[in-house]
Length: 339
Image 1 (cartoon, rainbow, N blue to C red):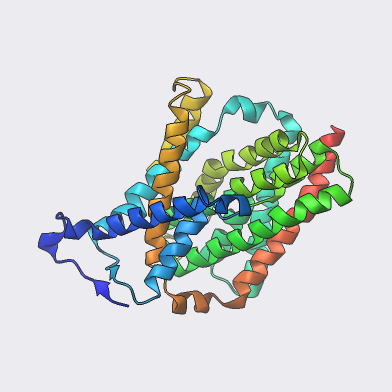
Image 2 (image 1 turned 90 degrees about the horizontal axis):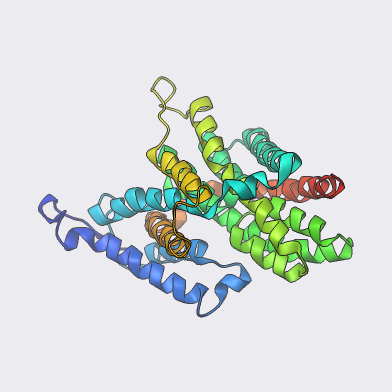
């Protein structure tokens, strides 16, 4: 693998932005695979695909910009955090409140129980606090976006981020295939199946695909329950930031990252209908593109040797959290239908 280093005087020239151009190219390729070639129908959406392409590029001997190169750093910081802030335009408080007290409580119970399981089991497995939180956030809330938000808050190691993303992708796809089949064979109603899917699957794309497999009226229920979990991204991350700083930050003041305030503002603007309806799809596309640029940069910073260091323990934790999501999600889905 050849690394392209950037002298200081090239930092603000075209050469200084080669990393950003490479990230944009990988994003374009990932979009083509996800949309025209319909990979997203198989659970391979834009975000996991672009991260995978970045990792493959970085480990096949192709030229990779230095990690401190201006364009690559811009993608990993500004672009990624902008995408996370814009992600809030996909959430409306009216939809969240429309789920009722038990609907909101179910999402909170799922997120808290998954994060608690990740901490207890991850500590028993000997995983670092950052690693178990990354895997826990990806499982509990919204896969790649939650992992990226957590990584951005603490600037974690790229190998830990890549390993967490891998578990979210693999077990999210497994859930996408298994839960619809189980829901049919367990003779769940559309509402129960939708609630189970929305409360238990990692990525929004996986949730939509699984609900469509079930059919009926399960899709709207699944999407709303999933949005409840996504809505909890900002408050959960704020609480974790203040309650559990990592090594080297124990005595430093912990600030709430600016992108979380942007996320909250986006939710409020969308909830108050201050953004024209025709603008929202463009904002959502912009959020996806910005997140993709950031994840491409993270992928380009990841090496196979680093991923090997994560070992089997990360996969054990991911599998255990997946099982916990399935079991507890089914229990909550039955309770939701009973209330």
